[in-house]
Length: 331
Length: 272
Image 1: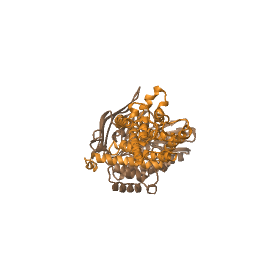
Image 2: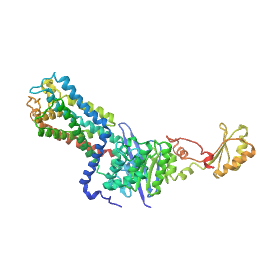
Image 3: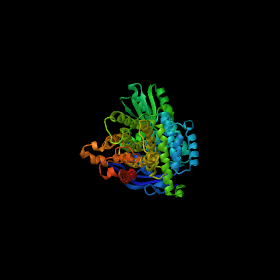
């Protein structure tokens, strides 16, 4: 299918009095229609700058970008008919009600008053805001406000939905709710460009991921491809009795692929593996037969955090967690 | 899919008008939702009326009339000069809250955001003026005739429109609402005080008089006094004192001619 987003060599430089920051330093993108692209990076990586250029809010200093073939600078009006933008910057009016916001944005999207009202009603139902429709938005919870924000972006049935950090600042429950909503939209066939600093979020929602840091693309691919760059999964066992770690290493060496390693300090024995959770059962059985007590056991799958660490040499800001996937979740 | 739907058929002007009205509707809709803003704007002006009429009124003799009739046109003028603050703060707030970005991501006429803002703020200030005029009548302010009152009222609104453009530009120049408030207060307070609003021009030091005389707050005040038959006509022979209506109209044109393009350019350059 044709690419709905193309970008070639996008550069954006913010000039201060003394310094200049290359917020974007040559970004190329090609997003096929009907897919979800996750733009992943820490705070200040240039994600929002890229989104603002694609949404016609900002002019690039170099390079060009098109949405469905329309140049974002020269044909910005045509582009605005095709996109819906939602996120940390494009907001709703907190002193209007949900109905008023949606109607206003619908009208400004050049829908007729009746169309705008009809579309607003549909969206209020879709986003579970019917009961709150006549309440002023400043009384809304964070999750409700984000849903309204997303509804506003959809008012004109855009071909391309751009979500800039749709869940930043939401509590975990609201975040999961937001993911469900977004997945629903994707099922309905909307093309989505999503920025996030949450690796988990890109993994959950995006077909393809572009990792950016300091205004440059440092990796691209599917979540699995990116994870493959930092190697496969590993089995990790924390042995209770320090004197029996050698035996543990021997057992793991037999089960896994390759030699087992050990961290003497934490008594953690590790081996590369390819058998998924089934191998864990074998490990537990063999340790049990040998009478070696296990304090903790996990199948360690590389997270996008590992990817980020491997690519940039620094962790992401929001979530630098290096936690293994608990065995119970994968078994 | 090439040509965007609907929009073009109504023509650019029709769309600009509709979009401007929609933005204006949105601005007006907000006013009763944040009543503090309007209430304090009105209270501040009423406070000036009360303070000056009852505290200074006895101490400042006015040739050919009483102090209340001298003061009220100046209070209206001062209120309208400060109207720039409402616009600036509203504009800064919309930029910072992301409303302007939302508007700019929609296929609407770009200028509608500014045009809607200037018109809705004139309507807002018309409401504030009505409340103030009623207050004026209560404390004893009188005018020659109803047509004169209406003419003066409309004159104030025309001036308010010019101040709205100043406010748009200021609002787009400053980073936060707090800075907008500081700047407005620092700039506008001296302008409204170095004028004929509270005292006759002749009581000011000689070197200050030309500035006070040509100050748009003064010419607007003098124009209103002339229109309404209120006392305080200056004995000065300069054009500003002899033809205050004309000079005020020139001020309106100058202010719009300067700050209209500046504000519009600033708004356009936000995408850089």
